[in-house]
Image (cartoon, rainbow, N blue to C red):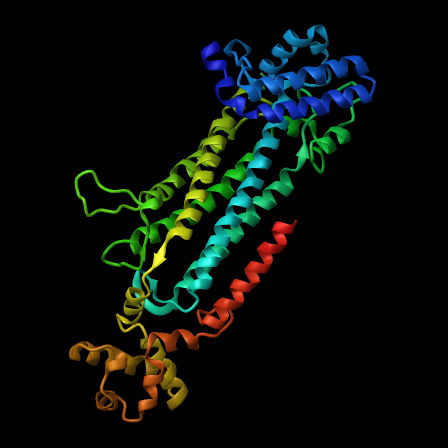
Length: 447
Ligand code: ARG
């Protein structure tokens, strides 16, 4: 029984939250006259000792006391005697674990937002330095149209911005205190749930005692946000893996973020990127795990819910590592502008620019210009040249009205500079977005 029942091995990570909850509860009980101020003082003093023991690493975590709640209470009894028994008045482990876990998940979400913003700042700095660095933009991982490296990085700034906002939204919804719901039905004592909610930094108490002790959707929501953020991280990680191959050679990573091979001395493997790419498995697995634990559970508390914590800890540990490693890698990476520019011009990447020129300069319908461009690409392929190196006569053999003016739009730099629509890849637009994000992050770090 003890082996299957025990949770102290993992829920000791709720120790700080458990102490905070107990302090708020004891102070409120005393203020409401439910326990004497002497008992409350003894309890609060004892909790300070417990905290000091935990900090010093001398606190005895014991399996026979099952979980963090009973470990703290048992130690408190050893330290202060019978007064310890009054702490659990008007409380149950059901609302106790609910409030501890909410506090933990809320803090984890807030910490994640900070880390996401650190990553965004790293991306912004790289984007600013590379607002004009040409690279191929891809669809289907085939060269499509030239873009800038800055623009590409800014796409991730947008994604991570939505991730941060998802964590903030989750915090706003979970910001209610379940403490005082007691076992499931509420309490007959004159407790003040608004006071404990406020003391613990919640907006208000939860409004239904049954819901308070059986809701874990705050954790599911946090895991959903974590899963989506991990998906974004894995996509960026995959791009880093691709870009660092000798075949692409778009960027380099220093020894700080690569590993060598035990047998092939020439190798520099992007292990950190690969591990970030893989971590989404743990995070999404955790969401699946907790969703399945919760499915079909009748109200209110069931012991199944003790299994809520390991997946959440695992997911946030993985996300924490991934975000730190990704921010480090973004700082570390050095682009290779020559390789990127050469690739940006390959694959007839300015074909759309030619088609657009035919529309603008010759007034052709886009469908017709698309057809002519197709013939030009075919001819360029036969001649073994890029579009900007096509002889004018060869172009005119296909469409006689084409003039030398066309060469002004056929380079990747011209192509990129022309895409000035809002959100486009033109360096002027990219710099605008960089400034907007810098101001936004500046404001957020101020409060
Ligand atoms: N360790 C338990 C958990 O994490 C605490 C709540 C126990 N409640 C109960 N009625 N047995 O869920």
